[in-house]
Amino acid sequence: MSNGISLKELAAELNLAPSTVSRALNDSYEISEATKKKVVSMAEKLNYQPNPFARSLRENKSKTIAVIIPERINNFFAQVMDGIEEVTHEHGFHLLVYSTHEDVEKEKKIVSLLQNRRADAIVMSVSSQTSDVSHLTKLYERELPIIFFDRICSEIPTTKFITNDYESAFQGTKHLIQQGCKKIAFLMLSKELSITKERHRGYLDALNEAGLAPEPTFSMHCCLNEEENIQSITQLLKSQNRPDGILSSVEKLAIATYHAVRKTDLRIPDDLKIITFSNMSSAGLLSPSLSTITQPALTIGQECAKLLIKKLTKPKHTDLIDQTIVIPSQITIRESTLVR
Image (cartoon, rainbow, N blue to C red; front, side, top):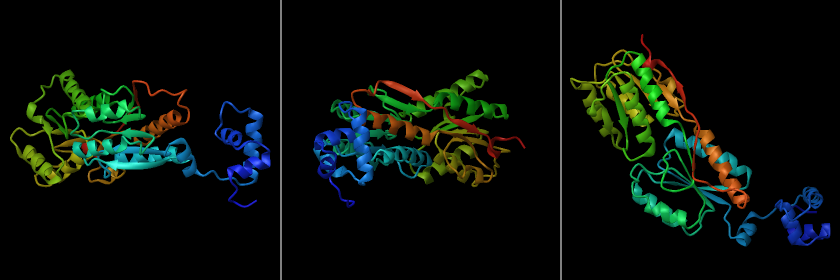
């Protein structure tokens, strides 16, 4: 037989109806195990290759999962993408990747586009500007399977994957205190994000536990422009009441801090200690090497994809229940926070 054998030809070889062969190949409960084995064996023998496009048209499914992320140039989101792709590829699904560039209006346009069932399901992390979630509520009401990760939307009753942001920020701040820091600043991009709220809460609780009064000016709200952030952090470091430790909620602000320090007479870690949430593989190559709270990005991506694949292939047996699944981060101490 040629490589181009069709489902109809395969059914003829087996003396079965094409519909029976199709259900057997899709592991339907309606078909006996003996028949399934017989069909699979003959399909392998004749090198039958299913046509995914024809199947998608018949089933009104695209075999596509949409992934909406705030930005592409971010090690965390890149690793989540790798995890999602690793699992979806194994099951014959492909990805549509959209970046909101931290713009809620772009996010709304993407969500509107996906309401026409361009994808079978969605994996999403919301933008830093997202506060009104009515566009996400409308998407959920269309009964399109959706999972959130990292920056979650708590108002939508579906499954969310996060890391232990509160505990990690608490431990990161506590580490700075143990290293002698008494004036610790917290750098953040958006006060609206679920992850920022949890990390900031962990930071404040660690200060309170150590008897250190939090200073309002040390909870610093930054922006998306790197040069503006470098300037703002430089001003903070040159101020009379400067911090001696920094917990950065995102890696881009830790890098901005390294640039800012170069504009001062300060030295890391002698005058300023830094720890950040980051998935940078190059953190250990910086000078000095950067202490990090590394999120389980690859695992989060894999778990999101596994659950969605189950939902799409076995919808009657899989529900995206309203739950938050926590996968812990790991703190790696390097030179930027050590006493020399």
